[in-house]
Amino acid sequence: MIVDYHMHLRNARGELAHDTWAIDPFVESAGEAGVDEIGFTEHIYYFKQTRSLWTVPYHTERCLFDIEAYVSAVVTARDRGLPVKLGLEVDYVPGREEETRELLAPYPWDYLLGSLHYIGGLGVDNEPRLVDAVGVEEAWRVYFETLAAAARSGLFDSLSHPDLVKIFGARAAPFDYGALVAAIADSDVAVEVSTAGLHKPVRELYPHPEFLAACHARDIPVTLASDAHSPDLVGRDFDRALELLGSVGYDTVTVFERRRGRQVPLG
Image (cartoon, rainbow, N blue to C red):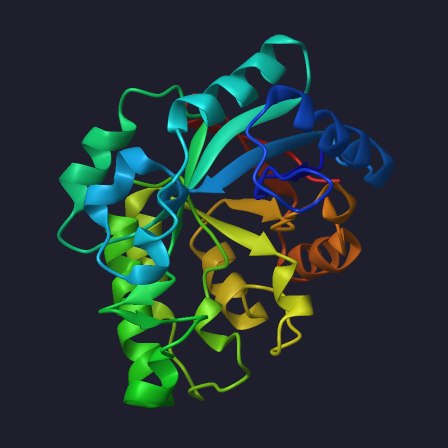
C-alpha cells in the first residue's frame, strides 16, 4: 500500500479551499500516481479557533478560517467513499500542550502531524532564521531537543519533515540522533518520510538516511508524504522515498484511523 499523509487542500488557483469538492482532484491525482490513500493536513494556524496559541506574526495574521468547514469538507469526502483521512499539521508550542490538546479534542482526527516551524520566535524554515540567529550547531541542538519534547508531548501521531532544520543546506556534522530517536521510540510516535526536501535548497529527502536508519533500529514506524499544496504534487518523487525506505530495511507503512495506527505492507 502507498499512502500520502501530508497535503494541504487548495483550489486550482492555489487558494485555501476547504470544500469537499476541492478534494476530488487530489484523489484523482493520487490514483494516477499509484497512491492508495491520502490524508489532508492543513496548517493549524490558519484557523481562528487556534488564535490563542500564537505569538509570531506569521501565525497570527493567518488565523482567518473556520476549522469546522475544513473538518466537514474532509469528513464529507470520506463519507462519499473517497480514500481520504482527516489530519492536521500542528505546530508544537512548548508550554502550550494542554491548550493545544483541548482545542483539538472535539474533532474526529485520523491523525495529527507534529511540526516545528518556529522556535522562540525564530524561523526554522522562514525569516527571521533560527540558523542565522544562533549558528548552525546551536540551531540543530535546540531544534532536535524541541522535536524530542514534541514527541514526548503525546499530542502527535507522526513527526512531519523531522529534520527540517537542514532545509537551507547548513548542517551540524557529525550529529548524534541517539537522544532524539530514543525519545521518539519511547513515545509511540511515527516519523514522516517526506519528498518535499528534494525541492528545497537542501535537495534531500526528509529525514537523512542515518536518522531513518536509527529509527528503523528502534522499530519506529513511518508515514509517507509529499507535502503537496496542489493536486499535481500528490505522490511526487515517491520512487525516491521508497528507495530510501527499502535501503534501511522498512517494508511497512503506517495507516491511521481515528488516532490508531496499524502497519500494512509498503509498496
